[in-house]
Image 1 (cartoon, one colour):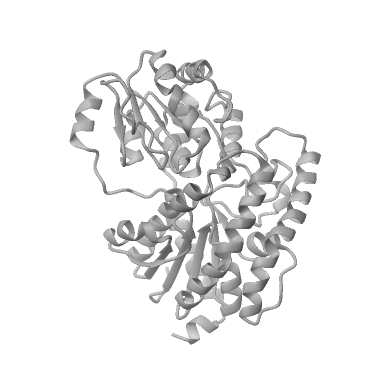
Image 2 (cartoon, rainbow, N blue to C red):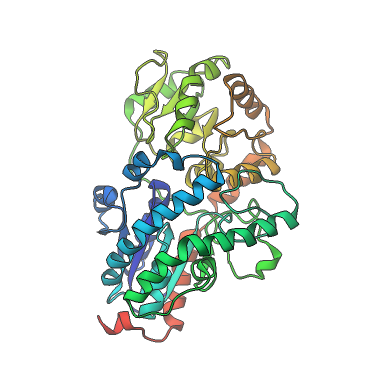
Length: 424
């Protein structure tokens, strides 16, 4: 434990799944006597402050951004590349202008999600920094393709080739925006975007190592700390709790921050697919507003906001998109899952869980049919439960938050006093 109180800025940009782990870390830093400041999109301010944490706005409201850029929600690699260029061209100067003053006087910077400018700010201020990777798919490896590629299980040589192509495309698409921000701060340009963001700055993987193993070529560069769990103080709604007790475990269907054509086509088939299993159903509205039309069967429920840690253990099956946060909560609950990946890391998570025998063969959200969804739910119910319980027990015993806090304290202790601390 550090012998002094540290000012720690926790910076993240994205959806709830990107923000929630930082809240868990912020709470842990506060419990250790440090002074955390959460920098996140402005739409999360009320939530963060409601937990008694200090808040500063960073980046864009991702829900609004996605509503204005619906074509991002696809597994099409070229569309994803164009979306990344648009996003970072707009957001890099915004993030730089907001992060630089926030980091003044801080002792450490912890960053995750799409807060990609954080390494540049840390370099400029000589500020100890740690990147938190919620998944392994963003790290170049022969074991998996780049995150925009939906197909997995490819030969290692092909994965390596695609990562080389990804590095070239990333440099062409993203370096210009980053170097413009660096020039304004009097910094030299970067030539390798991926190297700057993911390799030059210390990182930690907040994912389960047995399920998402390291590439031997990493040679220990990326230590693991397992999934980060935010213990949501919100209770289950009493009416929902009573409904759950008054019948067999239902199917949960929800896709978090996903929206667009993929979730729209799934919404159209939920009733047919789940009704064919004979199960009750809870629909998580999410950003897509599933179930909002009011056409669901009378004995089904729609939830707008319910803590997954309390909800998932009471489900028969959890049907979701495969985002890192939802996947982690379902794994810790030890319940059957059906993953319908739509974008990026979701394909990676679905592939790894299928290899481990924890889910049936995943089908892309953009392609699945109602009969296929029914069959997937029934296949998930038929899977052996022992492997799920082994993983759940391991995750319940993990202490990722404390490990990461300890790493940050060690980084600060080993670092020379930087410009940010000198300005305090």
